Image (tube, rainbow, N blue to C red):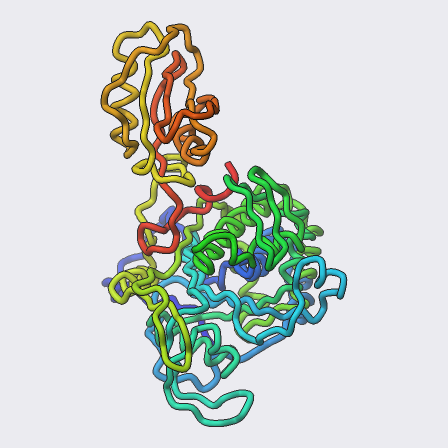
Length: 494
């Protein structure tokens, strides 16, 4: 049975006479923190529900009874030559396409027809820092090019040598054990716990927490899953949430775009659980956990004590405590004979990412809360003409310079507006460039959007007397390594 990785960071110091000290005693290692996933939210949800339940102080007896509901697997059986344990804890969260308990009506409504592939639809590593103050979630694209270790096919019983495969197919050939072995071989990150969740537990969890709120700047319509959301803010119940996290045909980004939406969903799920009062309601915690555990599979080492330890450690967890990214991709559509088109990781950037996990370091430099806002269009792609709508000399130059310093492509030639009594700063834009306008408005807190047909690609900012500052913004691009690391409170609805 795997044990939590808490390797000592240094050799023992010379002994001294004991003295009173206000320093807290070291905490016991706690198990995996999960907020998992929409398959992302899927698994995360499971662990988070358990965390929530434990942190509410429901008690060991109740947790023990819930523990009995978890189906057990042994993904670490007879495993040898594993990576060295690092600091913190690593949980492999996988979402499968199991749908056995979903009704015929739900299958039709949410486009869940067809036979399941018995493969992992979503795969991620959730790293919980040793001090239990941070969770880093790394999404591993299901079409990632992988080389399996030698193994016995669980379906045919045949012995296979190492061979190329898409990462999600490892589950079909060798179940949880081959999935863990393949991930460890690719990342050199030792996996401490394994959690597996299917469609059923995902839908149940979203419903029992009362739905999850997500925001989208663009309409989302996917004929494959049936998702049809207009731009704006939406509260999604279980079935609609499943459509949202499964959608792969909304844009050219395919699976990478889906992982971005899964990250948004996970952040929203964490926000829902930590801010809605669920954490203060022990019975609600119990209901959430019971709704999920019936269709969850976990390793034998993830038991009552681990759940309680994790819950105590994660009481103050919030969206800002989490960070999300996707393994950096070096080659898209990397063709492999007998396998098809795969995604090949960037070896240098991927190693840098996994090294940070092994060393228990943040994936990105921590930014002060609210310092950077995620927007749909990068400032470098937005052309801006600044006008001074007040009687304050030099305001136009100040606004132009501030926008330019944060990346916007200003004309560097501000002018005076037709009127000088503008109180609230206005972003004037052609409706065809509404996404750019929303990104620009996010950089100007309190500004007003004003569409004007025929204005063209250059947006206009009419500075008002309310102007104070330009807030830093950046585009959301989680598919490209370090530049794609985002914090939970940056991608959740604001």
